[in-house]
Length: 105
Image (cartoon, one colour):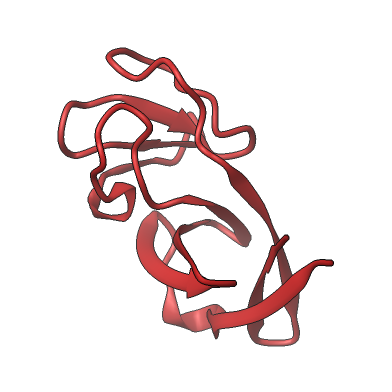
């Protein structure tokens, strides 16, 4: 069953910003680019490090791990550069009014 968690308000996150949030007992890197929100696991698949502390690459729709520089596709979780070779989980994001909701399983 899917669990829906309100993680923030729409205006709490600026475009080009990433933030760590908790949803369904999972640490999530929530990213905003323009009016679009993305959610992926906050843990790099290469080394257990917080992705939400990394740089958002808005044009590429990627998030960079600040530890070793791997980037992850915000829509698929697939690594786009080495040293990471395994994807990270991605989660559905729903915006209802001003609430940003992450859906976990």
